[in-house]
Image 1 (tube, one colour):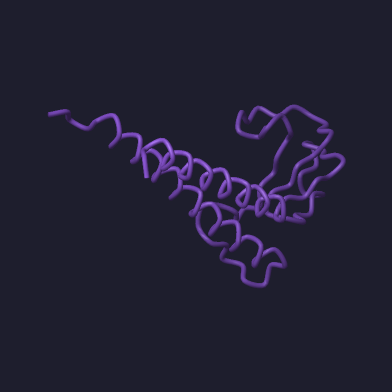
Image 2 (tube, one colour; image 1 turned 30 degrees about the horizontal axis):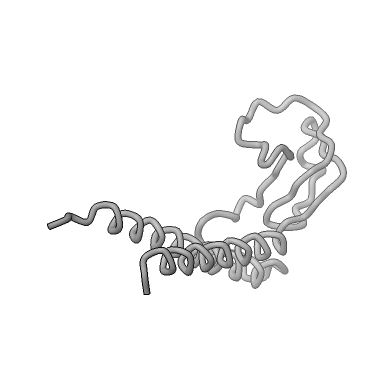
Length: 123
C-alpha cells in the first residue's frame, strides 16, 4: 500500500473516531433555556455538560463559554471517569471517555505517521 492510501485510511479512521466522540458527547449534554448567575444555587445539574441559551448576569470566567454558548460542567466531570456511579448519565459518560481516548489515539497515530513520513532520511 502506498503512503497516500495509508494516510487516507488513517484520516478516514480519525474522522470516524471524531464523529463517535461527538455523538457520545451529545448524549451527556443538556441544552437549557436560561441561567441566572446571581442565583447559582437554583441550578440543578441535569447532565455532565449543561449549555444555556440565555445567561443573566456578568461572568468573568473566560472558560465559561464553549463554542459560543455558556457552559456549566458537573463538578465531577473531567478527563477521568465519574466517581458517582449512581448518576443516570454514568454509562453515557463512560462511553464518552472511551470514545475520547480512541480519538486521542487516532490523532496520535496520524501524527506519528506524518512524523515518520517526513523525517525519513534519504540514502
